[in-house]
Amino acid sequence: MRILLLLLINSPIFAQVGIGTNTPNNNAMLEVYNDSKGILLPRVALQNSAIANPLSGHVQGMLVYNVAENSSGVTRVYPGMYYNDGNRWIRFVPKTTTVGELKHSFHNADHNGWYLLDGRTISSLSLTARNQAISLGYPTNLPVMDNLFLKAKSGSEILGSISGNQTLTINQNNLPNVNFIGSTNNSGNHSHNVDSYRGNENIGLLSTTILTLFVTETVAKENSLTTIRDTHTDGSHDHAVTFNSGGSNTPIENVPKYITANIFIYLGY
Image 1 (tube, helix red, strand yellow):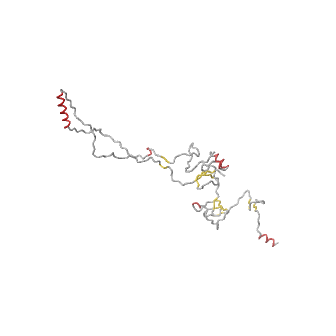
Image 2 (cartoon, rainbow, N blue to C red):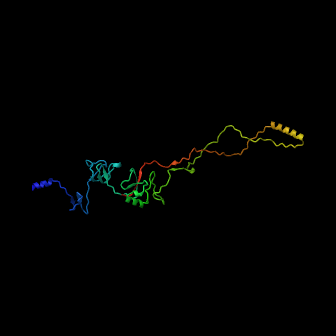
Image 3 (tube, rainbow, N blue to C red):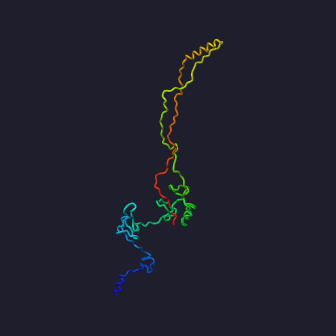
């Protein structure tokens, strides 16, 4: 009897183990059944998601409940369930993604139910994704989201509509309210052309002889007479002056700095 007992103790046992049940599932090494209690996982204080501590090393498939909030950035850990993939700790998070959600991503192709918005026909999608696209209002093609920004819907705007411009041109009323000060061109000393002036000399023509004498005398007077007159004055007045802005009607770029990313829509599997 003693020899048999020792053989049993030193021999490995290959069988399913049931706790709370006598018929554990054939595909499970361990099945725990209880309708009023749960399984209490090992409670540990992880330091960050990149290091195994308090374990001696990363073990793929390890499951723990983290009770600490440590580290910062992408390696920050929070209280909750974590599993290990052999290289790091990954937090269990509830799946909250719903059909129709959009996201920016550095992925270049469809993944995990997310489809790239590249304008393809919906007939190229899986049956599930195709039906979801139709329910969202895309019966033939997915929208093209290349080089576009997302804007929140306002009022009666149509979902998925594309509008707007990449440039804008300002109007005169958009210019600053300033006065441009300048002066007219100064050409230095200059002259103005003025019609000649001669007094009115009416002399009756008594005879041909008298006319000849009159003409001779008048010509002599004109040759020797110098008349000086000022140009006409209008009093106070303004001169219209035109200033050129130097512009060329170049539109203003209306696109801010950005990080290039693809836009995906969730349509499920």
